Length: 480
Image (tube, rainbow, N blue to C red; front, side, top):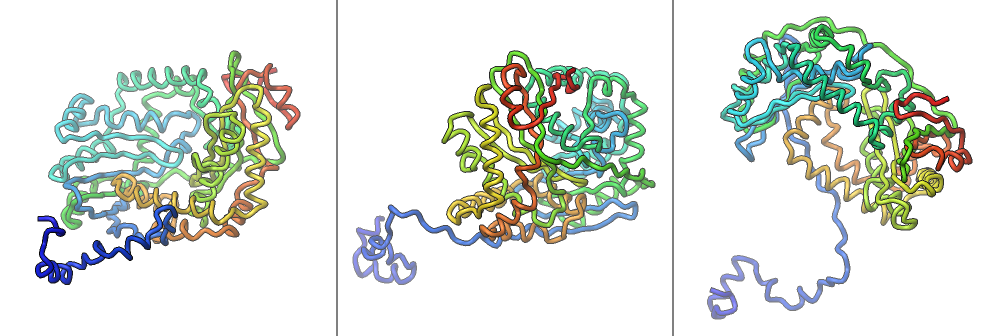
């Protein structure tokens, strides 16, 4: 029955009980000016999920995060050694991760895949600069079976010769294709110039991948896949005591060992502006990256750095996008990113432009970087970036894998225990003065590397007016 059809006698007690009087009060609706955008409220005091933190006798640190919204469970095992531990054969860590689920001492590759499929899951591994992660999710009724499958992959891979050759062919094919991909060439050249001889700057090549043998994978696994060099995150609808017992059963006999001593390698110091041009004949556009060293992952002001980055080049509302696309029409998009890692980090601002505007686009990128260092960001512009970052963070709390990663990052990078509990509040509290100070701490338009992939004969002369140019081939070796 519609409220408007109720008699006054019946309507009065209903209004008193439900408080719906505002629906019928003309004054209330008249007070709302729909032509004015509502003023956003303060960032919600979102608390990062509580977690149980235990360490098994063998050194494996386990984080258990209860989440009963769905009958699911996610496991994420992190080995705290990645591509930076590749030693003399770049690509070893990646191939090791690639083969973890392709056959173990008790399961062939086919058997492993069928068992994972039966559980409605996929056990996947990937290598990053600082770690290797092994991830799987399933219904929580399969918690024990999935744990056992993950333990087998992490502890008992066989690295069979036939699986190694299959994986090697895929990697070699990918490396060959990357020589024709401007984005890949830019990314690799940025790593070379920003990190130099540091392990972060070592790149997989066809020669290094061809040289990797089964013994190399076994050695890498034997040295680094140890419980005292790993963490396990459990996120889902589980009982902590029960899942702890299952973890101890699956991983408790994993033997710890002394880890190889980490080598300290200095990274190059950027001085002035220098240009690295990768000659790609036939290119009708240039791929640009203005780059320099960036903060480490444990930098105390990382939340503020994220707001700084979104202001400069986080998307459509970023200054690079507004300048290079909206004002000049030189590109479809222009972006920036910080890449903080355990032993250092990098920063890059990127764009793709027509050959004839390559040099002017670089000049505009440098101008926007310099403006952030010299001028406070207007409050209205900054408020938009604060809201954007806080909103993205709050949405990400819905993702189990993301939650697992953040908990493990606290251990992997030595972050304060309350780092993510204060994350949203800190991003939502950035002032124009704090933004400028953050920019001055991490950006410097006068001391940068500029990487460009394009046709040298079309753009080198204009680039030379900005700074010294070194020309490389698509093999990333200097040209004579």
